[in-house]
Image 1 (tube, helix red, strand yellow):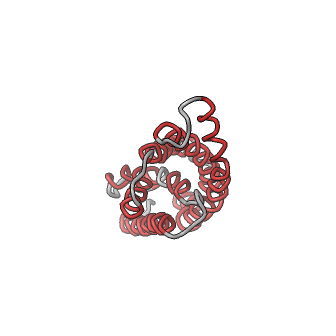
Image 2 (cartoon, rainbow, N blue to C red):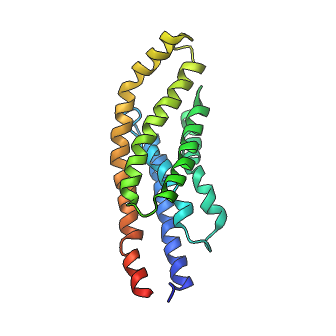
Image 3 (cartoon, rainbow, N blue to C red):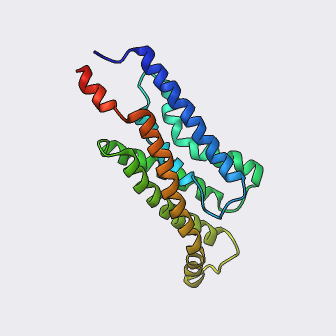
Length: 196
């Protein structure tokens, strides 16, 4: 016996509300004063990658695949308010590419806990972002000389930001993914066994 269409739609609507909450969390956190690079965006970019897998196929198909753009939408809305900057394309590309990469990891290891995998991928995301964004800073700004010394100095000076990114990835991935698992995935396997 399969779950009724109405129950699936209700479940998808609840997920949509949770997705909207996560988007508002990202926007709100980016606009309030906070410790530099202490952000939920690393975890949100990873979280956006599970939505094409998790949302029911009958649910709005375009929404499933636009989910990769959630971190980009958050960045763009807040950059409209905070202002645009040199190197922002590197930040946008880092979040988008990592969201797509995470999709393939979640798809391949779909039997693992979303919280554990989300935590690991979020921490790796912050390291990936550190590498990509600081390359943009070195390449597009006048802060560092365009030689090996300037390149190395750029990354050395950014190390305190990496620490903040990793700590925030741990905290926000547990918050986002564990809450998602509690609300939508706990008991799902047991229900599937009972129904078959």
